Image (cartoon, helix red, strand yellow):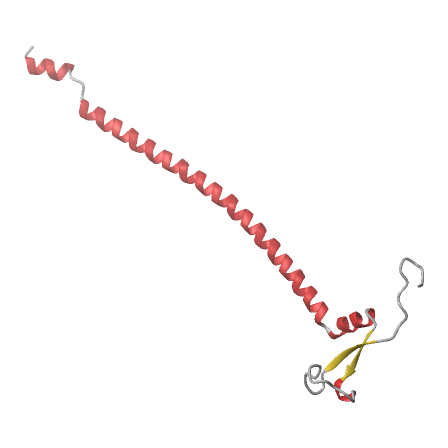
Length: 126
């Protein structure tokens, strides 16, 4: 056999081997990137879910506080609070003497306490 024939018969085809190694390396690299990105998406989805729960809780508390504020600012609620603390509303126009600090404008109301006996504490009247 001639020398060229022996070389070609016994030689490894390195260019095909390098192509195969390169393809396997690239596919492995893409697979690792895919797995990394899937894990990242999973952790971001969990964080997003936690933030959505916090947002829902904040919205619920905001709605409750808005309803409570609305309930406390209605005229009926204010009248109930004044009655609880034994306070009457007096029209400023009906007062004869006003000092400059208490006057706020025509038609406004000024709070004045009623004269009631003190409340019983622990069921015993003083």
